[in-house]
Length: 116
Image (cartoon, rainbow, N blue to C red; front, side, top):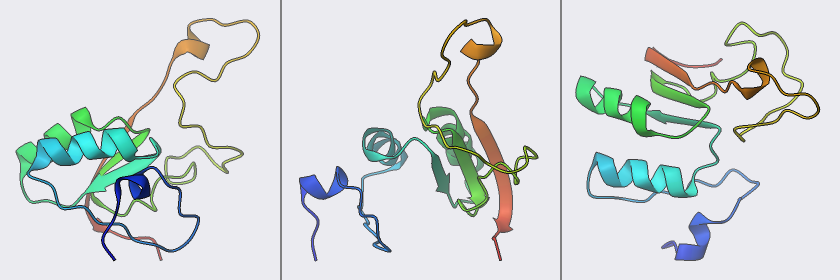
C-alpha cells in the first residue's frame, strides 16, 4: 500500500519494509537523516563518490557501504558482547572528562558481506 507522511515517523516493530523513491543521493541522505534511527544505515553502490558522500553525510552511529546492516554489533567491531545500544551523542552521567565527550561514527566498506 502507498505510504503516508505518518509512516515515516512510525517504528514498525515488525518485519515491514518501507520503500521511498527519491530524486538522487542528496534526497536519500536527507530522508535517512530525518527519519532514520541514527543506529545503522547502508548503501549498495559501485559509485565510489556516492559511497564517500554517503559515509560522510549520513548521521548514524554505523554507516556501511556494500555490506549488510546486520554487521553493526559490538562483536563485529571487536568490542565483545553488547550490553546496550545508544543512538544519542552524549550518554555520560556524573563527572565528565574528554573520554566521556568522545563519540564515534563507524564507517564500514564491504564487498557484499552478509551475516549467516
